Image: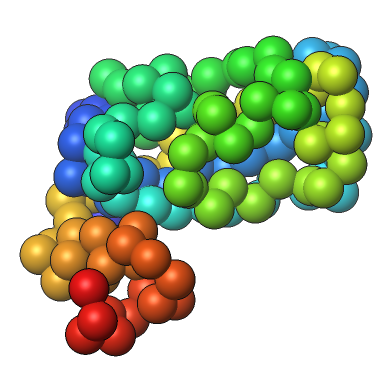
Length: 129
C-alpha cells in the first residue's frame, strides 16, 4: 500500500507513470502512460540525476523535464526506464513523470535490486561476484 504522505527518498520503492512527447503540451511519443517501478538510490554511484529530480516528491506530484535524447543514459544511469527508442534520436523531448506510489521496500527487494545492478546476472545473483 502506498504511503499517502510518503516522499521519494533513498531505499523507497517508487512507482511512477511516464509520458513522453515532442512538445511539453503534447505527450505523443507513447500511445499511453507507462508504469515504472524501482528502488531509489541503489545505483553504484548513488542517486541518478533522475532520482535527484524526484527526491522529496509525494504521491500525486508531477515532474516535467525537457531532455536531450543523447543524454538519456546520463540522466537515468542503470535504471531501465521504459522510454521509446524514438526519444533517443531526438535533439530534445519532454518527459512527464507522475508519482503513483512511495512504499517501504523490504530487505529482499533491496537485495534483489542491488544484485541486479552488479554485472549481467539478470537480477539473480550468479555467485561469481
